[in-house]
Image (cartoon, rainbow, N blue to C red):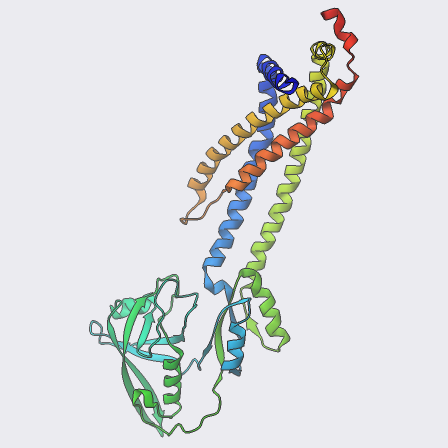
Length: 400
């Protein structure tokens, strides 16, 4: 009963001092609003940059430099690592080309061939070619050939034997066309078996599966690949993988420097934010403490009467704290509303790509901000209102 009565009395007194209450609210809003905007800019900017890097598989690609010698078993072991998203062997680059033509474009277009399989980050939602006569086209290749999903293409592979140029042809079906952002060069994505067949043919060997003649294959030792396509699982996995390959004596090229720059920017902005936030919160904390002290002195007569009526020190302190919490709640509401307006304006001015934000906060950020404001207000008021313990009931006798 006493607690509910204190809540009611503190609210009525808070409303009665409307001007002073409004000043307390505005003082808090002056701190809360800029901090929310600053954190929204920090989170929105870094989150957008990070998502942009994560959406681009090339950022997570690790390219072996120079000629390597990788077995299929070694690359399969790499693919099973938790920090590797995708790994597949590549044949020699000079052998991984083809001349394509279509019914709509008879002129041959020379393209590079890239091996692909399930889990290839460049494919997105495109179907994965599994048969040797199934391929995916890059956007630029599809444009030059005027080809679409479902079309059949003529593929020509040439080689030179004893000074004589030879060629073999096969038909390839287009399963899908990749968007321009996935791969921006002329290329086809095909099963590894097609690239191995093209390499064998250009090495003078026969390819029985396609009916191409050449030297008998016979018993061949395990194939050795000069390169591979490998992608890290996350941005954080790029640098550890680079260090792993360097320790193994393999020079690799990565986007680790670009990733490190974004991570460094995030750390630096966090330092700036927490420095400004610390100064702002310290100022607001001091202001609330001073306000609580002033309120105790200003309402000393009323509080002494409450003491005379039997209210404990804890109840009187709750009276002071509740009024600070009211100010904090109203200020938090106004601060969030003002931030939302600022967020709309900033995003309309600076955000260029759909799904990216110049300023952005998640629901949990709003919840944490409100809880922090209320907690800081209550703590500061409790610290500043300690003087209610010195108020004696005798001080209120003359006012009864």
